[in-house]
Length: 250
Image (cartoon, rainbow, N blue to C red; front, side):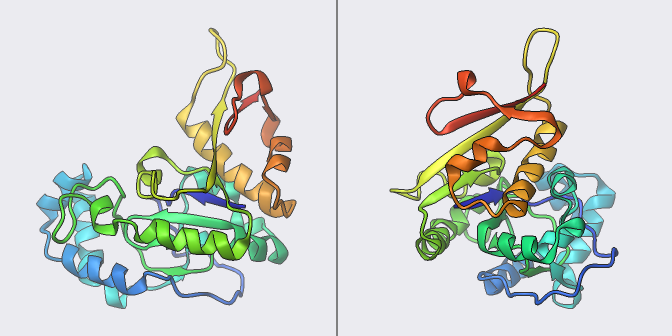
């Protein structure tokens, strides 16, 4: 089983990280090509494309311009959004990180597909961006390359099963491009006045917690993921169907 996560807009390149053997992203050359092309975009254009403030547009324009000289760190410790708050990699032991390297993948607009210990440079380029060199949008630029790599990694791993903890935006990069692969979709719900409800912040954090639980318990059989119980979540068989699973917090 390989679990998929989205990356994070929030990055942390300051906090001290464990001494681990880092790896090189499979699409490192493609990332450099994309960053070089994006360096030609003026901040005003980036602000429009990414729906961000002028300040953030200036920051990301400088990141693309100086990409080759920026610091690197493993993706697992560089991403710092809600999902990665739930995963809390800094408190994951060495065996758990090693398991993550084999069973967790992060989809990325710039890097395509990342293993946890693959090094990245600071960037922001969301998969839903309607820009790419020679194409109208980023998913067209990646075409089937991300899916093809994931298929090869699934073949090496041996299960043929994907646990999808990524957002709709990022999963779109591989959706419909992996024939024969079992894909289990997960949703998280919270108690509400009118019954279980979706809360975006909590759902993102729960995706990270589920990825951590997988690594802490060294889960390789997808069926065992129904026992996930972090932070009060429980599998809800009545609201689950086939490969669409719901977990509700009591």
